[in-house]
Amino acid sequence: MTHAMDLPAWAAVLTALLVVLGAGLTLLGAIGTLQFGSFFERVHAPTLGTSWGTGAIVLASIVCFSALGLRPVVHELLIGVFITATTPVTLMLLARAALYRDRTEGDANVPPRSLLRSPGGSLSRDRSSDGPGESPSRDPQTPEVRPMTPI
Amino acid sequence: MTANILPWSVTAAQIMLVAAMGCYAYRVVRGPRAQDRVLCLDAMYVSAMLLALTVGIRTGSQVYFEAALILAVLGFVSSVALAKFLMRGEVIE
Amino acid sequence: MNRVLPYPLLTAALLLTWLLLTSFSPGQFLLGAVIAVAASRAMAALQPSKPRLRRWQFIPRLAGIVALDILRSNMAVASIILGGRRRDRVAGFVAIPLDLRDKTGLAVLACIVTSTPGTAWIEYAHDTGVLLIHVLDLVDKDEWIALIKNRYEASLMEIFE
Image 1 (cartoon, rainbow over the protein chains, first blue to last red):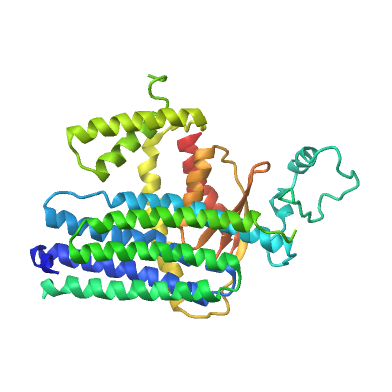
Image 2 (image 1 turned 180 degrees about the vertical axis):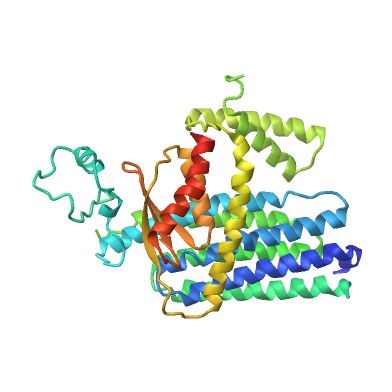
């Protein structure tokens, strides 16, 4: 770690603080996944690491290399942008998969799909989109489990 | 003193990141359900990416940035593939 | 212009990424420009819906608000985790009727909701526009609905619709 001597003091202190902050947030998120009881609570914990955990370490890397090279080095921002844009995709897919699996198993703790039907006129529109083959006597308020796959 | 603060804090950060990966690995092995395992595998990828960045800060080399970028891309693709598999791969309908 | 560059924003972003990953030199600029134009024209074959930015001057303000909110939410979730197994914390689902219909706006809202550690985007019904989120520390459902609608959805509708 010889290059640490070349860093000015302010850059060394700032890098040190940011690195410890980012790693600490990531570790807290990891402890959270051990601590929380259900999957939907656990989804929240890793986002500590992917939001400001990643952000702080990326900033630390930018500060360190910019101070070393005496010119702005910003390509680490690409990692930050990439992580911010991709984490929602992964977590949304995972949450939907978990919801789907819990619903097919009849878990009472997850909200039924009928919760997404807002009260009012939207119900009739949705029923017509189900096709004319549906039984007309079905109560629209009963929680329906619509098959999401053509299996 | 300021010359020593960076090596020490980077070492501390690396220990914390490895501990985080250990927590996630425990969930991947123990995780009650498949979605917990995939979630923590994805988080492990992110932690490994951050570890590569801290190694880059420690050595002052830009090579680790590219390793971190590849880790981020691979982690995203594999997690999406696994999540899609969880959604469609079930035969317990 | 429209024929040569179907997606000018995408082309600019690809060129910037190329320059960041290699170096800012004239040769790399030429190579990156060729690749970016070719890639964005290949993208035209997929025909994604083109995002329209109505009022881009609101974007920096929204980005600032979101960065601060995420920092605050980070601290809140960190204190929940450090506080140990508190029994009085209730996690739960909240259904939010959204008025935002623009696809890009919804994607940005998904990024905001998921990046905030206290909230997770679970499901969105396209036909009714109802969004289901999961909140880690749920005190008042109406407060969360008002927060999402007033704080984020209103700015996103100003930007995209």
